[in-house]
Image (tube, rainbow, N blue to C red; front, top):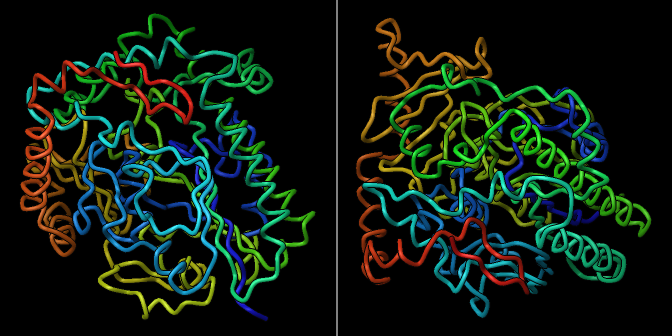
Length: 484
């Protein structure tokens, strides 16, 4: 039997805790639940960076952000670093993308055989305001989070409908064509990324239900770590939520978008089955990063808690154990070897400094001795942030601020920060050494800020990029940008 094909489904900003198969008490995700039941779910999976553009560059290249650059939402992937798309296309595989890529611009060689309706960053420049890393500006686009939450359609829901339609057509008409080598189809949706406008049939599944308020949402419960205060005071999303009803409207919108995403996943799985491809196609589902979703009074991304730096990650298909949950920490860098080996390319042929380990091997019981890293160098932060897992410990290192430490075994919701506990000094030192085995955070922070200063100067400096305004979110193809 030849190596299987691979269907990769990526969503945008899907909090890994908001899944039925992950025990969420409210959200309905029957198709993703079925995918997990038929395969393996990695319950401690992490993005390389908790924001769209670096996360997608890290997924494409299979390396950490400090290895490749592409630091923030104004510094997008341009094809200059080899990706799994390049490697597979160059070996004769069909490697097709449908939907959001968030790379720099059309016309560059990103490595795909074909890009259908790609979303790239605005004007090849993206979020220039995020290049300002000190005296952070207040973001005008933040008001869209609360203002657009509710039932209806948005440019993003229309875009996802088109993505799903095209992917079904490709599977039925192109995926079934005889070819010498297996193909990879990368289908990238935007849901549940804000605006939190959900199709009514999904929104009203949740609006009239008793929705639990986000963890630590009450002002007296919110942590006041300076990194979180920087982000909160720059994005100020919560300033526009005036009542508990506003919060629940936003939650219903997000949950509704998750169900809309799940509906589209179901359509792809139906197409895969009805076209006769299921028996020789593996499926990978993940998201670029998660969402704070109101926890700790925060919305959006850019923090290192498991709701944001964590991602859903499910694999199913030939050779994948059924109904298995893997708690071993894994990363998006592990998707690179998994993808190339699925279609028959030995990882050793393309390793080139990649630190990933095949998810297939981990699903079979491998326990790699390595440190899984997520890092952040972008908008709403004045300092680099680095999160690692060391056993049950989650360690978050800030170049400028005191670290945070959480015991995920006893405190999975990361409520009790042990970073200031004198009894934890030994653990903190051990975690810091583990981080240093992967990168030097001070050197990485300096390198990121030097690149950002260069881009800031090239775009007219601080006042010019602030005057340009805040985009809020990238417009879908065919829709105009609205700066705030």
